Length: 447
Image 1: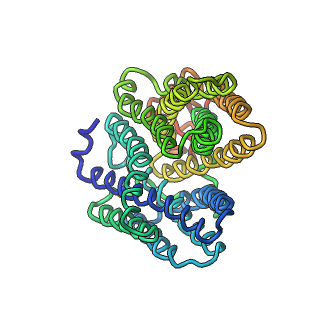
Image 2: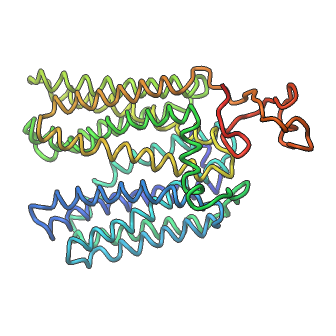
């Protein structure tokens, strides 16, 4: 898996991702401490609102940026977004009112919503070979999991010697380092042309392609299953460990680590598995593992007893395994499902629609947990996960071939009328076979 780092351009982009993630991890802790300083006992409400603002920015901004990403020079755009994020991080220590936090968080997350899909859509052009790209996806998943483990430890160590305000400085350093790494390499120009049409058509082009592609409709179901499982982990780990089990705060990281280690283990294993297995059965298996983990968690919470703590850790580990199995290969599906000129818009659609799923499941995990307890929360999220799994299995065909025979409309039976018919293998007038994606020439998926 590590050989892909021999590619200098990808190596610099991967390091840019790592340092930006570490900076973001510090920002998360620092923001919580700043909220407590300004709002005291209402800090939880402030952070909840900030999280909602983050999700809204992700859902609204990503499709707009995806529509115009091909018009912009990639390197300059990515560097600009890093600098915007650094500028916001510099400003945060100086806020004195809660509403100022909300404005700055919206600006920060809007820049992230512009940066992340564009960055993700660049990697397939840097690594055109599928095996290399698969390894890059696993490394990306590994980077996210390592950040969730390393950032809290690094932040805790720093807080022993500095004020939390200086953590924002670490965030600034992370974003500036990311910008320098991006600017140090030459990125490939986006292939293809900028899509035509008005602002509405361009903004929703990626979502339109996404929803007309069967395997991507299946991916949306898998996103819902992943959101249900990860929301339980992110929202309720602290509550479960401290309020339900009565364990000290120092045990909370062990719960998050169990999830992270499961995810990391699968990220390291997936490149070999994907050489022998198709995406569909593995990703469905991952969603099934997450759903089974939630159902098992309901049983553990209902039974309780002296072994609840180790079974809780095992539940989080299983969910982590399923989470990585489900989401790590998703970039392969997006790459297969879009022409190069539409790729930024389709990656942006995945970014936006996946966060719609979290926007649904985060409040459920929090409000049901507070009102009805952990057992009911596990059950409800397991039902949501099962619904996502079922939708994916139905929408994503078993025989998911890349090359499809299809027919073009009347008047397209000669090369002069439709030069596109010379591409691939022409089987009869107006019919031919080639790698199929939804685009201007192909507006419907073949029956």
